Image (tube, rainbow, N blue to C red):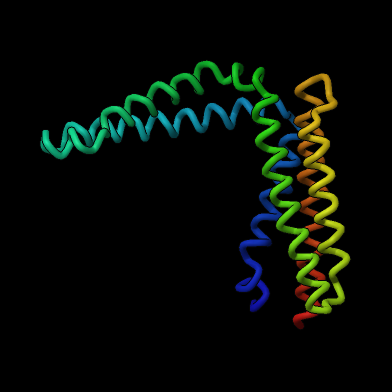
Length: 180
């Protein structure tokens, strides 16, 4: 139970990465469109809430708050995402770059964890180093985008997430065993 308290977030993150990776392998384009539509629906709800809050607030406070502008912007972006989610899928290269940069930052964080483990003379430092190398290598492949189709790239991202989740799980278990 102590391990769940200490590493609960890391365990949830591994499970989340596994789930997203599997969904990307099964239906990458459908999953991506579904995410875009879900974000769009959320933005529409936030937009409606902000517009309603604007009209419920007294005139001076409402003028200073800019809730109407934010609400209308959220509504427009939400409607765009719901009805034009395919546009985002087509402009995938920008999203891929952002994802690759995110994974690269994760790899750099894992690099520090590996170096910290070496400096602290931890026996499992090599697992942290391996996950850092995997994350950085995966990020570089994603950033370079050598693939010709979006579907193949999404599947590659799914595989990258699965490999990273498994590696993180192994590192977590290794660290947890040394704490027992």
